[in-house]
Image (cartoon, rainbow, N blue to C red; front, side, top):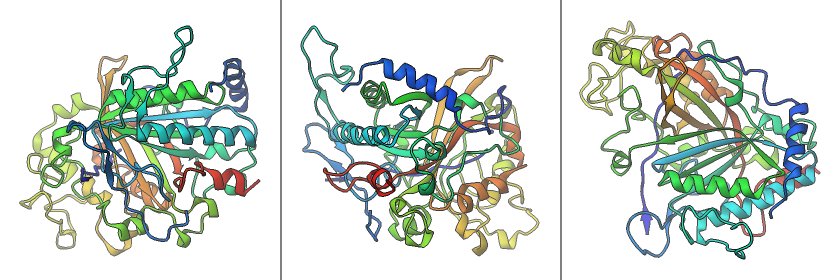
Length: 442
């Protein structure tokens, strides 16, 4: 049985947050050594497909219809969680890798593969004698159901430093994220050696998976930062009829790419022969994560007309200004002076819809977030922006440069995130994530 769910949403850049510039990159080696010492003190617990592989939702034998038995494929040339339809809950976690040699990294990838394969398949939770700590947190009960979960693994530029001898294998566009003019990046919320994107139907399932992984790798992984995101389940179920709205109250994702279009995904998202990446990196993709705070108090006091000209769409319907329907295509060529849609409107800058900018398209997969309030007494909420593209420079970086200085910047402030590379998938049970990376270059 196949189940279809929606995809997509939109980027912007976002407001005043105190913090320091994090462009210097990941933790120093000194910090890593300290973390390694702390981790080691614990007890260890213990693609070559030319065509884009569809990633259908696999559903296990139906026990009920509440979605808990929905299951995504784990094995395949490409990882799930990229073109997979978005579920309602997301948890993105960045780690520092504590190992200092290639065998440490190999052990990490091998065991991580086993844990993810189990969590995406589901099954009875492991048990132990009553005098020992239970192997499973018990958050999902004695039966760990898949709940539509995907756990997508990506690596950051810092993983290719001197520790593992992988410098020659670094994806050619993978760099440490540097700040754009409107950014106020906080170092503690940026970068990382390893990124896990955990998505499922519920936040509890994501948290269960994170705790499982943390318990499995006390000497190899140290949390660096995490962010939880969400989407409204009722709009997820009606993709194509009702687009998700972001924290600004505007429909977000109307013009996103069709993740079901395999030819388009091959061209825009997945790395292939034409991208001249290291051999191990074929069937991967560059992942951008940006924690974009929206200054909602200021936005909510802004006149509707001004909000709409900043975005370029009608707030109620989502239609481009001067048009009727949400999915009407803006005709910028007939409006060179921006009399209908201002030339600096967000949607016009993000996608000018010209032949020259077609190569800058990206697949967006963001979520909303809300995490309390700031020390200044303002709501801390916004967009957990995620995008995928085969060429980081031609994709997100070029799009963001076009958005630099846009009027929307008065209401948004990026505070964290990073650039990562999603590794190819695991094709069979005898293989593991990153195998061609750690073995091919040894």
